[in-house]
Structures are given as structure tokens and as C-alpha cells.
Image (cartoon, rainbow, N blue to C red):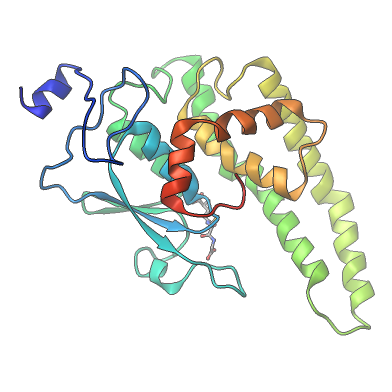
Length: 260
Ligand SMILES: N[C@@H](CCC(=O)N[C@@H](CS)C(=O)NCC(=O)O)C(=O)O
């Protein structure tokens, strides 16, 4: 039987080129390997959000190519090569079927819609779980990341070289903003997330979904930037995802990742 026909009938593939066709038990594998279709390309910036895209692709069993990009060692920004792909040059970026896609949440939605033929990674359309799923897809970048980014920026401002007479003033401003705004906002968000995960093991409920992949990055960053002491649910979430086979494979594909 032709590959495509087998796929449409729901048959699960068990073999394929090494490193390309791996997925959880019972899930049909993406069948178009070997066809004249350019492989999906992920522009992967080291230690960045694009790690989630690699993980999602591993979960989906979609073959993909990784182009690794290094950060500028001084500014930590992405290299100009990424701006040649998309005007902002931020990570992640993917190229698929002649399209360039940016913004993690949009990429996650695209990949799930396009390749999750058995709806393993998104709850059914119209369900309450689907509403929660969409909420977390947006919340990760729209609400959780901004205070984490503020923390990063203010910590850097506080430790950047400055004339000796300006240092106490800068330090004072950094401490004040951190105490009055950043720390309380971080506590608000991460206490909330701790509470959510005390109701169910995954962000959308009883089942793992792509929303957990999307939420992995803010939780990983929080673990590093503010610590997760006193938050056993979030600590457990990280331990569970870090042990998942697809997560481990994505690490191999992406190279060193400071937050795993
Ligand atoms: N909300 C965007 C954020 C993109 C973003 O800021 N990516 C970071 C990587 S974690 C980046 O590219 N940083 C390097 C730079 O800004 O040049 C998304 O989720 O895709």
C-alpha cells in the first residue's frame, strides 16, 4: 500500500530514515519523507524559544532540518542572518512550503493544525479544554514572559559598568523598580501557575498538549531567573517534561540549552 494511502487509513508507520520518524505509541507518523517536498526548516537560536518548536516537531514526528544560529556574545541578540529570513530576525522562525512563519504561538498553532492529524496535542475544537489551550498559547508570551524580561533587563542594568558616582543612583532605581513592581508581578504570575498545576497535571487539564510545550519556556526561565523554591507543582512540571523522550531528542537536535 502506498505511504499516503496507509496514512489516510490511519496506519501507523514504524520505520523510516534514522532520526526522522519517531513518535509516541500508536500515533501515525508524518508520511511525506522521501517525497520531493523540501523539509521544514527551523531557524534555531541557541538558548532560545525555538527549543519549543524543535520539541513540538519531535512530538509530531515531522521531519525537519535545523539551522543553528549563535547569539552575539556581547549583545546576546540574534545574528543578522536571521533578519535575512524575517524583518525582526527573532527566534523562532520556520520555513515551510514556501512560507516563513514567526512568533512561537503562531508557529505552534500552525504546526498543530497542519501536522497533528490525530489531534494528540490539542483538545477538540469547541471544548472548554480548547479554550484553556488557546489561553495558555497566548498567556505564555503575552503575560508570563514580560515580567521575566523586565527582570533580565533590570538585572543587567544593575550590573552594567557605570561611572562610580552614578552606580548608587542606578542601583537605587533598579532595586526600587524590582521591589515595587517586578518581584510582585513575578510572584503573582508564578503563584497563579503553581495554583493552576495543583488542579491538574497539565495546563489544559488531564492531557498533555502543545500548550504545555508553549508554557515550558516561561517556567524554565523562571526556574533560572527567580527560582522555583516553594513551588512544587512547577518544579514537578519541569521534571516531567525534561524526562519526555521527544524533549530529549529536541535537545540533541538543538544543541546546548541552558534551561533544561
Ligand atoms: N514573542 C516572540 C519573542 C521572540 C524573541 O524575542 N525571541 C528571542 C529568543 S528567546 C530572540 O530572538 N532574541 C534575540 C534578539 O532579540 O535578537 C516569540 O515568541 O516568538
